[in-house]
Image (cartoon, rainbow, N blue to C red; front, side, top):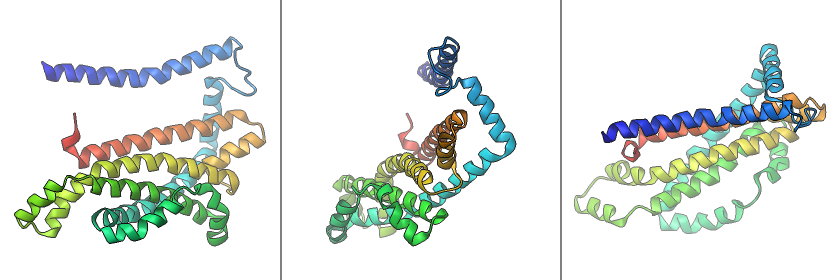
Length: 258
């Protein structure tokens, strides 16, 4: 009985998740028809759909989307791997934490887009500077969350492991990593959103491809429908990244399903 109730609640949640955006689009369309919005600046969903179809058929949307996906995927991996490793070290070792914590505290608050000119000098105006700014933004969030996750593990688990003389690799795989995974995934989910933000901002400034470039160039030429297409694509990417990370979280932490 309880299982059926859970399934019904889950079905209701999924239905609401689907219906709520559709309802917003319908209200938006009706408001456009009624003249509440100036369609020169806020086009109706049907006009945006037509513009998106034109961009898809011409191949322009895929060109921009593939460029952005390449930059964000490479930058994300480059930022996550050292972020997790250094965060683990800082969480486990006081000396490493004492040495690196002041550096992290000093450099983390710097707006990442503010160092884009420096990155362009080092990596050029191509993909390298965009990948680097994504990696830097992701690195700090993953590092801090990983460190906090390791430090948040109850000491009793370490004491029990020592009493049973557990090898270091088993201590890591069965205590440290599972204990830190919730915080690591929280950092990954935050990083995915921030990565999109800094990438689009970087593509505004110095790029000739990418979703950010599509939005900015459409604004400059007053092709507002294409600009909205770019914004919607970014929104879809954010939802897709969140969904994939949530599925990965369920896969690697099955004990947290409820």
